[in-house]
Amino acid sequence: MTDSPITLADGIAAVLSDARGESVTVGDVHRLTGGASRQVWSVEAFDADGGPLPVVLRRDPPGHGDAQRMRAEAACLRAAAAAGVPVPQVLASGDAAPGIDAPYLLMNRVDGESIPRRLQRDPELTTARSELAEQMGYVLGLIHLSDVAEVAMLDSADPLDAIEAMYREFDEPRPAVEVGLRWLRDHRPSARPKALVHGDFRMGNLLVDRTGIRGVLDWELAHLGDPIEDLGWLCVRAWRFGAELPVGGVGTREQLVDGYERATGTRPSDAELHWWEAYGTLRWLVLSRFQAQRHFGGEEFSLELASIGRRVCESEYDVLLALGLLEDPGDDPEPRSAATTVHDRPATTEIVDLVAATLTDEIAQALGDDHERQRYLLRICVNLLRIAGREISAGDDAANTVRDRLREVGCDTEADLATRIRSGAVDYDDVAVRVAVSDAVLARLRVANPRHLIP
Image (tube, rainbow, N blue to C red):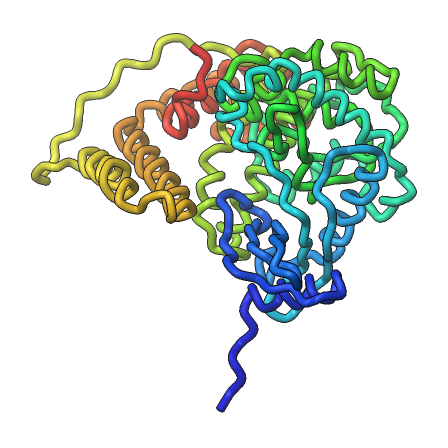
């Protein structure tokens, strides 16, 4: 007779019991949506008297752990708490534990809303929303006042060098990235003294209720660097989630820096904030490609990670937009005559539409609210199907147009143009170059996510 394997719930109960010095029992444990790089689990725990202990587990995917980063995340939470930042309390952390089987962090669960679209629209959050941009600036100021001696283990490499090195590892030259890198090198502001930088302070990583920010989450990208990086990252278009206002879709840049000045007594210039916003946009582009590579490189099979690969063109578009280098290539070329086919209907595009509609209108509805993660994955499947349908419908016309634009600047491929921008052989501000770069990005975006285009 063999012993029963230790479950995740058993492992959490043992760790919490040891940390609290009393017996802790664990009931329901379920994984929450999101968490493409780290898993997030909701834990129903009870103390020795049966009192509730709302707990959240963050852990690396088993077999893909980074213990050093998890230790650093725990240190950041403790340092930020000491500086007055609203963060969850660290209950326990470790490199591994039986049943948990990966580097982990156990925290108390903080109540509040984190879903960006609800934060942008919920009538009950109207008052908090009106003050949220200023409050985000203030909380960022508190983070940057944290004692850096407590987080000395964090990376302090030059951020632009680091993101360029990550991009080069893909060996996938992209003209929009090369344009962004050259512009950032040409316009870099003077550096500020290094501070604790959260690295991913944005809508989605904040818990908010009617009183304002209750918790700052997801410190896995924290590092030591220029504090204005966090403010620029918050202004990146991706974190507006379709809304117009530049700070998370809820406020203005002026409100953000007002709050920051209230906390720190310093105020970044418009040019400084713009540079870090442009950097953040390029950074998200490269990080998106990195996330997708975890799937395509065979490190981790993941529908979520794979789907991010089709979102890279959104950031290419946003980079050109932020730098004022996006060129409208004019009207789309006249579509070629539809090819004849020997196949019966439904045609390929009709099959995609039928399957997507059925998954959305019938199967997703049948799952119900108790299958939250399954519904989330189903939405990703539907989105990928619709991307495939748009790509089939687009045919070769866009690719042929991009090829013609590249030839106008003496290049055969986008990789060739990227290499020439990098070397300085062509000027990225030349109108013909801008058109060639923009046309390729727009061709990808019209297929991947046409709603991302600014009307």
